[in-house]
Image (cartoon, rainbow over all chains, first blue to last red; front, side, top):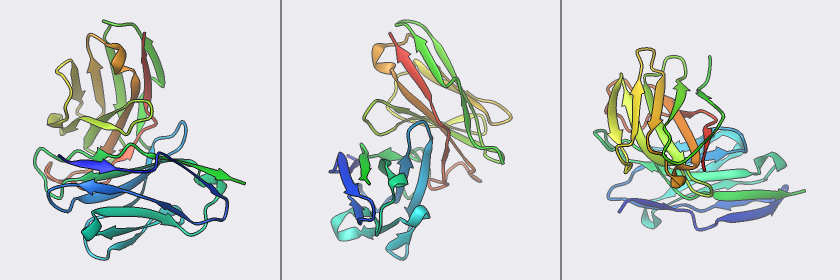
Length: 116
Length: 117
């Protein structure tokens, strides 16, 4: 079955520290891969996406993610976390083809807290 | 450019009632997707509308239905509300040139928080 796993439910880091949020997927083919951020009272915002090509993708707000086919992973990283990065982070996948399966499949999310 | 808007922001209903949630898509977008996000969970795909037709559906019962209007705004209707329907309902719009693409970026609204008592 198609699924997305985010192993860390909650992570706390200190401001200025580096961050890595994990995402693993189970899919028949390499899907399209996404990271979204959700802040309280706000809609989901796309941080970055991977479709093909260079496996290291750059996103907004200083985030990057690396696709590793052998590990079925798409981990999100940031070298130096800011207090404003505290939010819920979701990894999602979408089928790499059209038809009736264009839905996004989501992980359960990782809640990030940032200590001053 | 106006983003995706949803109304109402919050809603309280009782079991058995019916509810209608509304979504205005971003200017230039022709596709609307609806998601249900229960507390502490990731969003679950309900269905998608493309050019006023349902264009994909998740694992939700028929009492979840929708509409898309000529201006591409959309409604989500839920009949016979159950306690488990309490959730944040998210609308996302995108532009799809053919109705078959799986990768157009979806822009999300802030959601409608539905509480069923």
